[in-house]
Image 1 (cartoon, one colour):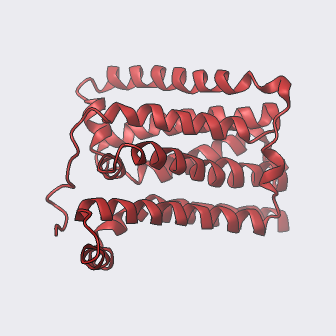
Image 2 (spheres, rainbow, N blue to C red; image 1 turned 90 degrees about the vertical axis):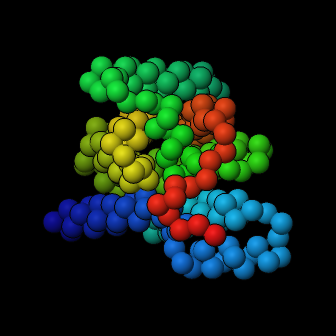
Image 3 (cartoon, rainbow, N blue to C red; image 1 turned 45 degrees about the vertical axis):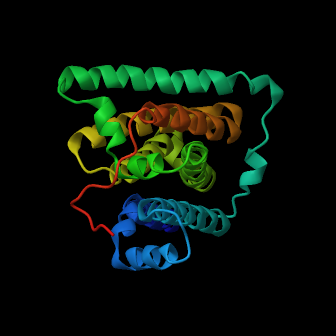
Length: 255
């Protein structure tokens, strides 16, 4: 009974953390952040939108990192131990990346069959955090998604999934993959504003999570999923780099 209550408590904690983290980007339009941006503008030549982008990105990164470290510490999981990879499993890295993209492609084709009017490119580049990222200088458009993907991996596959298989082995591998994937999808979809955006992120996050969890179980290492998610985020975000930098929607406060 005690273990069951511990499991329920763990689910409540990680679900709450995923929900809060998924909506944290909205803080970029809060009065506090807008006031900070205006203050920084007095001492910087950067435009307001760019300052706002950096602030929101930093808050997103810090929130995920603090939550992940807290979980790893609370459940005494040494993530560094899972960063080593047996040389015989090196081939898993490119194979996992191919699997993530193949699964995404398959699910995307099914999505387009069901909703042929969805403009994937337009929906992707109109997601709030993607717009923030596309406002950044060239090098930051690379660093931003890579760092975000790594922090997301540290939280979901590095903390949530490893804790599930270490502290709650009675749930089994399939259930652990399911829980980790549902939480990751929830956190990602909460960052969207339209049905099309939500469906696209559901497809991508499901692919990343399922393949990532399987690679951990197969290799005993966290490294393949970390590298694959970073590469996945970089590749797909570059779909939006040919679009002109856009300002946030006029529905939100401006400077």
